Image (cartoon, each protein chain N blue to C red):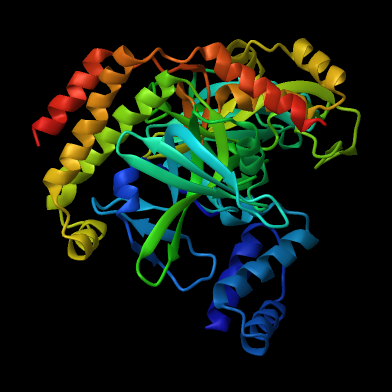
Length: 209
Length: 308
């Protein structure tokens, strides 16, 4: 049985700086991996952030493009007819709102460079608490990867050869993300949990019409 | 080569009181290996099965009582005759007459489901006691391995206590998927299997009885597990009782309303789950929202970054 891919935790900045994809076999169903500068091998990711913009760019059918900001940058997500649940959620959620996205990595070669995006499997409205936890978790996983860059793991070697990552830069990225948690809590009010749930209920009512 | 094997089989058959002409065995083996190009082991197995079937002898008797002793972790294929030294961890309620007992047994390396079939007429085991099981057969059901008892299974209680290892998993992670078959489901009254479109895999179209369960995928960014929440845990965690779920489905005229509400609650949020691990599944015994992050957590992470 095919093992389910673990959902990796990556900050937007690192995700967007990734441009190396590979497969482990020639099989057309073999999973496609995106290797990030700190050596994370991603096929599925779990990200959280603030939905800041959404737009239906579809011509005949709905096709949503949305921007989800974390403290380091912005993820781009695309949901069309093959991601019906995620597309429906996007049509209903109004930015700004904290959301969690589980999705597959996606890359597009413009000819001048690789653009990364996420094809969502699911999107949910979350609260600030869940987002804070994600930031800490993603920070820790990123730091562990940075610390492991000295090892001779094949993925690490590949990442080092391809990106020659500047460790200090990624360390600063992590610190910036961590420090944003405290700041945000003092500067803004945490969104009421009730609000998040209200959106949820609207979603379900509409789904029945 | 064929001749040697044929003689081997002939003598084993006669030990069992079965008189089979050597030439018969030889010509069957010869046909399979030479005419059909079947590997020797498979040819041997095929011939043995044929004679055993004709004389109604269970395979275990032919292959002897010395089934290969293994550890739970090493069980990775079906149809193997094995022996286990294990502790009975849990007995499940079986409403099927064909099953005398069903539950979980475990050793230092893991836990596995066992089925004690009624027709095998084996002694019953007790929860919490340790046994040596000889001649059990590995099997798989829906991607999970299990062991089945049969007429040749020997069950012997032992005094020593087995420390069931790596059995309980404790993981904190995000719920990244709620799988189909979650929410308000129906089970077959006779075998307790979940119905698919009103049908039981074993008993066909049945009325069924309602149950509540959740199959949630929990992922901590390093490992991913399927957490199985039974009715009790589901009710406690979601606050939706089985009765409330039935009412919810009735009012919405849609049984999937329940799983929608549960998905809404759990997806994308962090939970801590604890329970015995069986293969890639965790049979959840405790589940709660992960404790909120504290300033201390943030400071620890900052210190970790600055220490690099």
